[in-house]
Image (tube, rainbow, N blue to C red; front, side, top):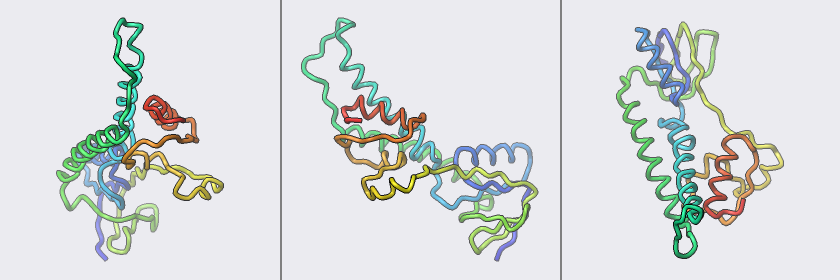
Length: 198
């Protein structure tokens, strides 16, 4: 097992972890970035960025359907092609992720540790079974994931988490959105404006 010593160990290479890494380096500290999942940040992959792309498509559909008060008459009904909407969302999302990946590639290889860390003590981390890290400070920037109540688990493949929306190839005919927080409201309104029964 390899042993490393650092000023700051950062758990998670998402938006917060990358910002912590940059701040540590700017302060002249030795920093290690530890990531077990894919690089690319939640924001770019399944969060803010693809969500805003879906919202932009929904806003375009909504505006196109409400032009008459401005004296603008559009012939026929506004139609939404779900496959085209989701294709654009995924293409642009992948472009954003590419920018993040470029930034990660610019981080020196010796500062990036692949794997999942667990605390052995307050200042010692073990990354999988390959690296032990002694750190003066540890930044926990591991992100989060949705909590699924047990009754919903029985839905099987009909249960779609918000992260899964951005893997769709087409828009569904209808969905039920549980969780009226910011994410639920954004996705629910966007899908409704794109013609999905919500």
